[in-house]
Amino acid sequence: MFTPIHQPPRTAVHFCRYCGHATELREPEGDNRKRAVCPSCGTIHYINPLVVVGTLPVWQDRILLCKRNIEPRRGKWTLPAGFMELHETTSQGAARETMEESGAEFDMGPLFGVMNVPEVGQVHMFYLCTLRHDRFDPGHETMEARLFSEEEIPWEELSFRTVEHMLRTFLADRAKGHFGVHVHDFMTEDTPT
Image (cartoon, rainbow, N blue to C red; front, side):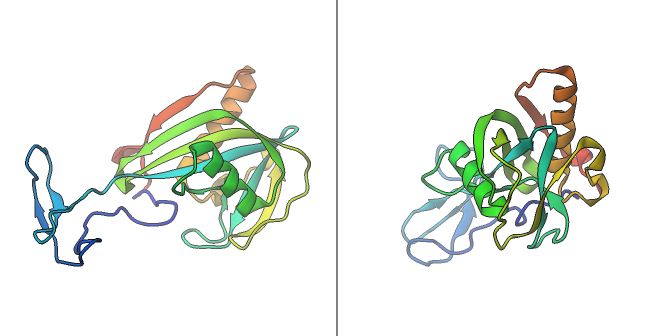
């Protein structure tokens, strides 16, 4: 099964966020799916996908990866990424996560990849970025931030399938000399067991 970046999919709201009353699972009038509805105050609780934002940072011909210092997949290599926060754009969130996890200085580039991961209720968005130098000051979520050439990428030690997909897509585009925007749907059959 696919492992999410930070948590399993959210599937239920048992108590109303506003009044604390136990919710009931029912289909609200005019809706087409069952939702957690508060019988006391009438609030309908929607559970929507989480957005994961990150970057694919490059210095000359090398790619920056971060070794995770948190679960899940502590000790595995990843691209700097994490959950988008309220009141920020996707590119602002990707930049924030990159600064927090790698301590890198960089210039943001264009959107490079969108990956839908419905099994875990997530959408992953990665931006290209160009590093300003090869010195890093990683935060507490990262054991180590290091640059890798294509031949050095630790494929067997990557944290998530989405990270592997982004890296392979980037390397294929780089070999062609043109970077596009890529969309991929990770369905259950795509996920490792």
